[in-house]
Amino acid sequence: MNLELISGGQLLLFFIGIYSAVISCTYFLLPLYLQGTLNFSGGQIGLLYAVLNLNALLVAFPVGVSGDRYPARVLTRLGLAGTAFCLWGMAATAHFWSFLAVFWGFGLSLSLFRQSLDILLFKENPADSARRFGQFNAMRMGGMMLGALGGGVLIYLFDFPRVIQLFGVGLFLLVWPAARLPLTGGGRASLWQYRRDFFTGPVLFFAAWLFLFTLHWGAEATSLALFLKHNLGLEPLGVGAYMAGEFGVISVTAYLYGRFWAGKLKPLGFLSLALLASGSGHILMTYPNLPWSFAMRALHGFGDGLILMETYTTVARLFHVDRIGGNASLISLTTTLGVLVGSLIFGPLGAGLGYQMPLIISGVISLALLPMAYAGLKE
Image (cartoon, rainbow, N blue to C red; front, side, top):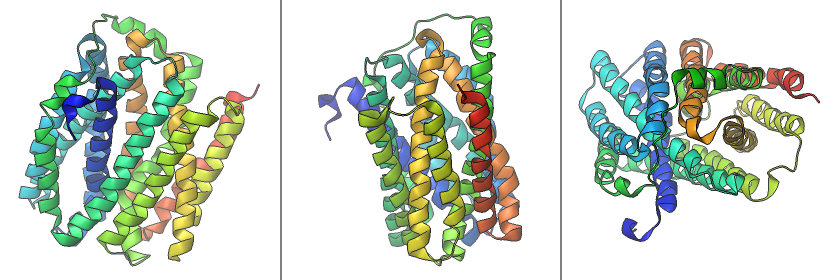
């Protein structure tokens, strides 16, 4: 692909696809390497993912405010370079504490990379934002699909350290073309304005609900790949293909939502459908039959795709574009906190009670959010 021939907006879609491919391969397939090759315990794996999200908590708001004031593409380039360096560091170490230190830097770099792309998306402020959000998230999930499938193939052919080294080289080569991303920034909002925006009833309800929902992402991070390996008997290639199928469902759901479904359902009906699909799919996929499990995982992906789109459209609706970087970062902080808490809870739980239990319990939590959605959105 000749990156000189595509526009800044198209380049943004390309970069979210690249980000997602990297995070899909490392985030979801990494536990197989940590347990199978490095012999890390369930508690250690949970701690690694907790730290990955903890540093995202620490930098989320500063990154968001910086994206409001200065060109977000600068943050993208810093994130690309840092992620490439840390991937090489992860490939070079096998001791827990040194791996933990590099993993902390990996999380910091990913936060810079990911948040800057979200800021660029919101700052573009297109007339048809739902369609734009659908394209962005379709590309994001398409990247995760390719990352999971391609990562599984590469791990089958080589080994995990060599694969993440290849990813690191690819990211480093993209630092230069990232300078052609859209130019944003220039606002100087005070911290008091961000506080006034965030501490309102609708925003706090949205943040609390989203925190509880994203607990299941912590369960997925620490237990899903290990469930597929130990309960369904899949090798890394099969794990990657299984996950790629779900990401494909989410990608198609996001695109169709942005293209056709936006505004067609009332918020309560929309969230009810999404939560029923996500929660029930998460529970039912744990039945140890591969075709059944995959079908229920696809149902879960449909629900997650709807909620993913609702999150972006809600952020765009709740906040002014001049301060949307800082405020969107606070929403991102909320979801990161959900993953952090979920990782700490479900990492040891999966190791102790079976890798299906975190998926079942977090699915029940998603279903339990239905009354909360009714209480907050009833008309």
